[in-house]
Length: 224
Length: 359
Ligand SMILES: [Zn+2]
Image (cartoon, rainbow over all chains, first blue to last red; front, side, top):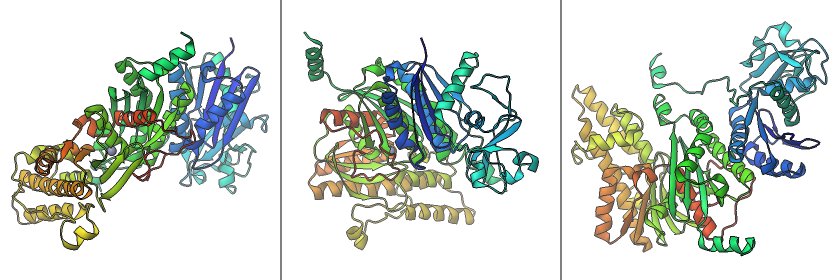
């Protein structure tokens, strides 16, 4: 029997997809305040559009980020709780990997970057290479761990690679080769996750914060 | 009997089974009630993580809520012996509280509602503090006067109907009562959270040793701020008193300071609560919130209520602090009274006014 997948990513905008074989539906919202408001209505509406009920879903996939914390958590907790309530597995995927896969529409070979908005004048980023020998749904190989950085601190030869994500929109002078891929697509997330699951890859759900909370312990405050 | 008749019959006899989620501060609470009966109150607290910082760090709390959510739901259903598919409704704290923390609970509750196909009730945290006593002491007398005192709030509320009519009589104009306990504990070198430590130290001390100020209790203040509170001046006064001792090279009588400070707080709280009851002709007082666990507050409130002929209700300490049972209890009342569910697009509202019982 084929899988019915509910996919949720809130690392950039909000994107929710339901795929049930040939029937699928995807919806999104880019209201910056609206992650908490919009995820559940999008879940309900995409289930209805795909013609399935919550009980039909066999797998949940969430984007692990990195992304602004508050919004990121809304998507992850929605996916975790839905899967628990239905007694089905939940899988997690680095959201930058999804953007990299989306970028393959525009890059056919060589290396490229994904850089997304990390706020505070920083970007979340990773470096990728196109591998034409890999399956079509999973052809971008990540070369570096996801990280957070001030874009000006990246070496120029890195910054000048073709770059997907909103990094180039925010810092056009620092990322001179923008790719027309801005936000994560839950549809592409679904395809990538299914490809890796079928290949036997373990996909743990694990929020990628990449920054520690902003607070000093009482011991740290005491040290000048 | 047809399926439809059987469902109708079971609805008429069975009380609604409601799960409540609470994430407004540092406790991940999951409670389940059937009607007015508490089945389980599961809590995961991140208070130990905050202790290192000397106070609640919102981002630390939010991360802990995400980690604890599914395990706490799982524990609650297991201990209550119910399945999620048995639930009739989900209730969640939609405000007030820490924005990022609230959002984890609200998103989780919505996802549960979508996954299970049941209605969702977004409810006010303060109203839930009042409604929790229904599962402890039975139906609320109407009207009730409620005093909620914790690290986040200090309010006097007139409650004609906990599901849709709550009026604010007064609240703190600066620090919350629990916040004053935390700050004074820090001055005295006691750990966070300060309430239990001050309560314990105070038992060894003399509560009339030092005459600390009672904020907003005299003259013009009693006209303008009749049922409001102020604890910031008291906290400063304690700090000055301790500093003066230290500057003079004298030892600080920690137990006496703790007892005298605690006496000042509870004196103001109970005096205004009883006065509010009298002036509004309400013969029922309920106290809730973390500070309601304070032994001196409970004793003094009992004494003054007895003297005034007022019936006092205080839930057990575990139900006074933030928990999921209180949210489930209010949610169950919403179902019983036939209130319409909240919209699935409901927001988390960090400054939700207490007069708004349901989002
Ligand atoms: Zn509270």
